[in-house]
Length: 120
Image (cartoon, rainbow, N blue to C red; front, side, top):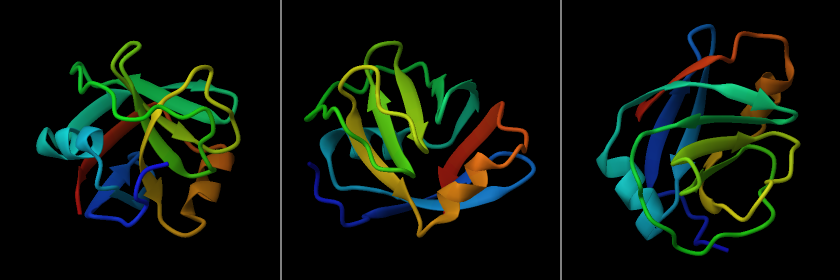
């Protein structure tokens, strides 16, 4: 597991609502932060949202479990993934976490097909 102390605050802007989050101090999370902002088209699979960032950030320490509200990256498709009830289909790098219980907003039927990720 990565050092889960937040080092870089970020904003997840879904258009209709915004969630606060933070990136951890891992090499993949630092490379992710260096390339902010991102504009993504998202796909939902159960309790997971994912979309391509178009960059290969490499791997650190992929894990098989991500907690609800977890933000991950995978080299398979160069995807950023947000988990809110789904288990990863394969090991992913856990790079950040949505603040507090804000991830519960993802359970509501709000539009979640677009996402802008930027520094807070």
